[in-house]
Length: 227
Image 1 (tube, one colour):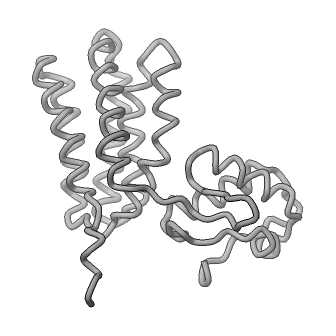
Image 2: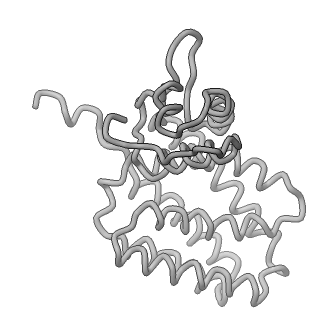
C-alpha cells in the first residue's frame, strides 16, 4: 500500500463510495493480499473522517475482501488453493449447471445479445492486455446465466463466493499468458448455448470451469524457496 493512493473524497461521506473505492483498489490489484488498511492513512488520503471508512471496512469484510482481527489492523484477504479447488469451484459448478438445466426456455435473443456484447468487450480487453476488466466481463458473462433463475437464491449464493473468486483471479494474474483464449472460450460457450444439445452444453460448461481453475492455478508456494 506504500505507493497506492486513494482518491480524495472531500465533501463525500457516503459509506458506499468509500467501499467502492477500496473494493476497486483490491479488485484492480493495487492492493494485494496481506496489505494493511489503516483507517488513519485512508482517512488522510480521502480527506474524510474515519467513521465511514470503518463502516466500509466492515462491509468489505462481510464481502470476503478484507480480514479484521481484534486489536489488529485490517488487511486485504487472501484465498487458499484448497478453498478454491474444494469449495468455491464445486459450488460455482453446481450453481451454473443448475441454471443451465432450468433456463432453456428463457434463453431468448435478448439474453444472447447481452452475451455477445460481453464477448466482444472481452476480446477488446484481451487485445489491450486489461486483465482486471477482462475478469469483470468474465464474471458478468456467467452472472447473466445465473440471473435467469426465477428464485433469488442462486444469485444470493453466487454473491457469497464471487468476491473470493475475484481475489483468486487477481492473485494469479501472472499465470495468464494468453488473454485471447479467455475470450475465445466464452465465445465457444455462447456458440454452444445457441446451437448445442443440453448434454453438449453441460459437458463444455463443466470443462470450462474446471479448465479455468487450472488456467488460474495458484503459484506453488515452494517456488520461491531457496532463491
